[in-house]
Image (cartoon, rainbow, N blue to C red; front, side):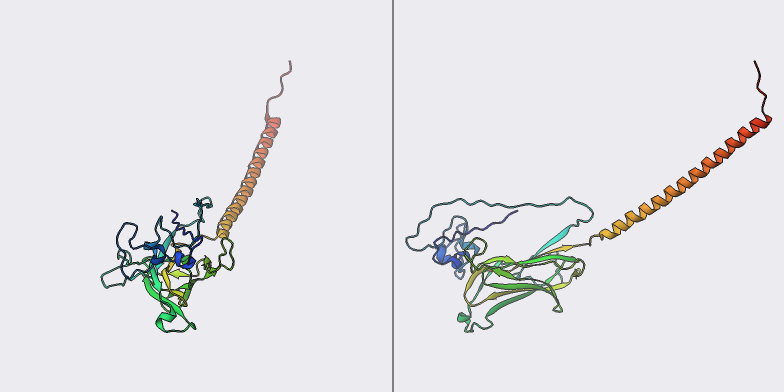
Length: 295
């Protein structure tokens, strides 16, 4: 499944505001199903649905264009070294809390998906250390080994991390911002997120373990509809080392060589015994056999 949200910012009056789906820039008061927006809803996915248009500069005109998505799928042949993984998606807006009678597996999580960041000016704080930090605790329903992790943030994001309950860092993911104008390097926009690949088997998660998720955003300016998602892949088991397989093969080969040598020795012995028997038989026939009949 591909979930693509494309926003056209050509000629936009406020490009960043367009990408943050500010409702006033889209002149939207209802969602895509015609339902009125909440009075305090200032921006997010409910304001930039299909066919909506962000406010452009006066006099700007652009031709309609068609976009195509190009992607590459890679795969490898299945063998015993390929193990399945479980995919977990953590949401920093999840308000689920464990109760004595609830479990992580069947509990209903309440994820808002998006949230707003108030600027430091609005809260009376200066720019120094002007960071919005959100932390939540999560209980893992299953155990396993952490294989991969990456976060999803919007512009203004400064990074995310996953910790154990005792504060030990398990995985972190930081944004990379563009610095130019070319595609894939647009200044002010997040163009990538760092990933973490712990050394296989070094980060184990216990069933029922409590993890701490943290997301950080800059508060120098107001942001609407930002997200804080963290994806991890967890494997139940570890792949068997390839050298073990080679050792098994080498051991089997050694056993086979020894067996062949023993078989060869046994065969030589049998041939020697047969030769002695035949030689003895001919010798006996020569000494005690019948005389030739002359014609």
